[in-house]
Each structure stands twice: as structure tokens, then as C-alpha cells.
Image (cartoon, rainbow, N blue to C red):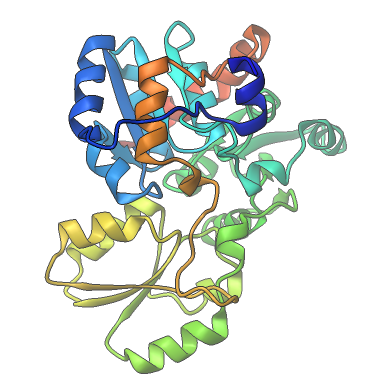
Length: 330
């Protein structure tokens, strides 16, 4: 089986790794040798977060991808994030440890169907959440993240009609915060949709002093219980600055690693989903491992590419987001 076929089937390079190797040291050596930078999302496993040059949420990662001087961007995240990096730095090599690290939210909005949906509202501006495919970004006027979605909507004239996609929960929260009437695409993130209101209620009863903090991709019934709602970075900052000593956290459990590092004197409890698991992991995010990351940098594969015409169209709404965010100091 040749490497192209292997990547299309498995999504990653598979080869034997010497068990005596210190992967942290080897990755550091390879980064210097190849002038590579590792960008990691907060939802990655702790080892990957600890080796990364930059850890952040979608907005911070986009900003880093746009300004990096590295020749190679290794994106420890999911496919749409690596695509965004390629759109912003088309001349750089962008690697993703596992090509099958997808996104249930991005999958919930096929571009050909969204195009038809958009055609029904010709006088509307399209704002899409960054958690979508490059093709969907190419159909958009402005991209946003959960950090800046409210401010981006508020930056537009009050009479401007807006389509917001693909996340209906984030869109509903933004509509509520801004008082704007948004036309929402019916998409959602599987991880944030399955938090159990009933289990969270019981957890709050067991931890009466805990603050309940939640990501706006959660359903409205869960958000209604929250003491604070914010992006992944927003949740981290809130936990650091709050006087509370205990927190129930309703987002992907990977963020708890950074919370515990920043606040060793505080307790963080992952909010439970409505299944048998104690915490809520994104199976796509967790496809990346330290071993896959090492092999990815070593072999320069798998590489993420985006067609040139899509790069041209998708870059405009992302740059518009970055401009608005810079003006607002986000």
C-alpha cells in the first residue's frame, strides 16, 4: 500500500516508533530542523498541549496562523482548523496529525445545501462560525468565532439582515445577546449537544458552591443554568479571575488541563453528558496523539491543501473577521 492510499484509508502515517525515544525531545529537534510551529487547540490531549508553541481557541489559532514566520504549521486540532491555517498562509506547508480528525458541526452543514439555503435570503449577509469547511467559508461574508460572534453581529447596521450558521445554539445565544433577528442554519456540535441538564442539576446539588460555566454551543436549557457563558478562552479567563474555588465546566474536557495548570488551588469538574461517560470528549479532537504528531512532523505528512479558488474566496471573510477583531481589541 503506498502512502497516499494509506492516508486515505487510515488518515495518518503509521510506522514503528522506537519505544526508548523521548518524543518530546524528538519533536523539539524536528521543529528546529524544519522551522515548524505546533498550534494546538485547548481540546487536545494534555501531552500535545504541553509540547505546543501556541495553545488557544479558534480565534487565537487563526491569529497565530496568519502571523507565523514558520515554514511548516503543524495543526493539532481538527480538519477545518488546518484548512483555515492554509487559507491564511497558502505558501506554508500545513500538516494535520490525522486527516480523519473531522468535526460533527462542520459535517452538519454541507456547502451545496447551504448554498441553496442562502439563495432564499438574497438580501442577507452570511456570518459563519469558523467551525465549518473551507467551501462554506467561501460562501460567507464574515467568519466569526465564539469569542467575537456577538461583537461581529453588533458591528453591522441594525437593519442589516443576517444568516448565521452552522451552529444553531451559538446563533440563538448571539441573537439573544444582541437582540437581532438571525436566520439560523440547523446545525450543532455533537459534543456540546449531549450535556445532560438532569445530571448537571444533580452535580450542582452535590457541589452547591461550584460555579457552572458553559460554552455557547450548548443547548439553551443548559445555558439557562450557567453562571457564566463564554468561548473556551473566555471560560479559562473566567476561572482564573473568579474568587470561586470550584467549577462545573460544560465544554470539551480538554480545557480542564489548562484550567488546572493556571489554578492549581481550584477544583474543576467536567459536566457530564447524557451517556455513561463521566466527561465529554470530542472523539475527533482526541484522534490526534503525541505519536501521530511526531510521525507527522518527521514525514511531513499528512498535508492539508485547499483548492486555490476556494482559498481566494474563503480568505476574504476570515480577513474581515480578523480586521473587526483587531479594531475591537479582541
